[in-house]
Every structure is written in structure tokens, then in C-alpha cells.
Length: 90
Image 1 (cartoon, rainbow, N blue to C red):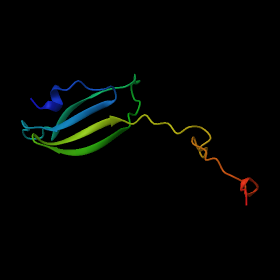
Image 2: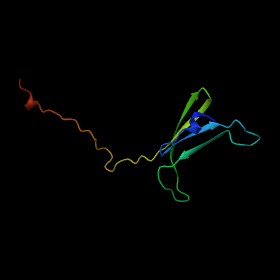
Image 3: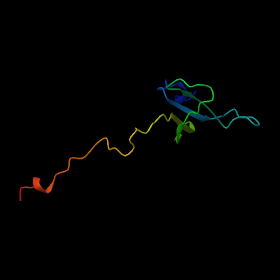
């Protein structure tokens, strides 16, 4: 069993591993995703994925993509403090 299969997952993360026992039309990858929130039937789940190479072979690391852009859109959460020319001492 791979270390990725044995690892306790954080909510919203998962992994797909190469299916070593593939036969015929079986899946190329198998794995699991520990969901972060409840979903209703028919609701779309957005995922983000990264490919990784490990000693045990290739895998795809998964993460639920629940990002929601804040309302207001262009508001900078870290506004810079701007100095006016009047604040310059020379």
C-alpha cells in the first residue's frame, strides 16, 4: 500500500494513483477525495489537480476548489499606504 493511500487526508484533499490492476476497460487511475462540505445531488464539484512523481510511481494530487471571489471584485484586501507630495519634507 502506498504512503499516499495510508495517509489521513485533510478535508478537501485527495489523490489518484495509477491503477496497477487495470484490466480491459477498467479505470487508468483510482483514488479518493475527502470532501470539505456537503453537496446536493447534481451539484458540480470543482477540483484542482497536480501531477507528481514518487518512488511508488505517478500520482495526481487533488484539492476541492471552493474559492469564491469576494463581492466588489477589484477591491484590494491589502491597500497600500500612499503618501502625498505634501508629506515629503523637501
